[in-house]
Length: 168
Image (cartoon, rainbow, N blue to C red; front, side, top):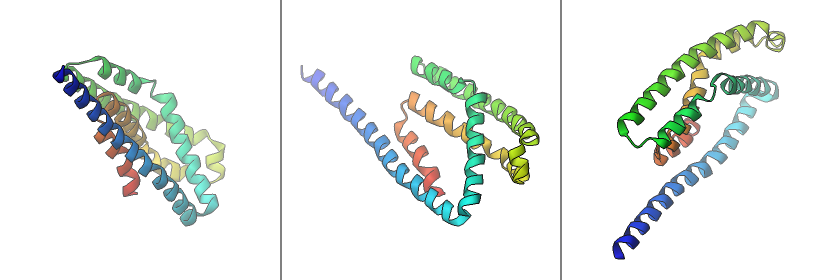
């Protein structure tokens, strides 16, 4: 009976600790996001900040349409697998798929730049083309968030949610 109680208490304390780290990361990330938005608005001004958010949203929409739900499939495969070797293979396959999707999205965004009248009329097309290589950061962030949560690496997930905003 004592062993069962000990194991239950140990399991609950580990889950509470992981939940604490994730909650702490979210509580830090939200104010940081707000502060970054305020600072960027003051530095860029309303027009340039609007252009920044416009380009940012195009990248986010690109992720939705081009990732094909691959990251969620990798997440599900990691959750269902208990073999460490298989989980490493899923991570490797996810990274390779991310690279392929990244190159494909760079091509799609480059072609999109040539046909979007809004980008051309605001003279944002050259800026947009220069930012296309950074779209990989969005894919990598999405991949890390889904894979670390599936692999129960909550502390690393917490770091990955806070660190980019803190470094910015």
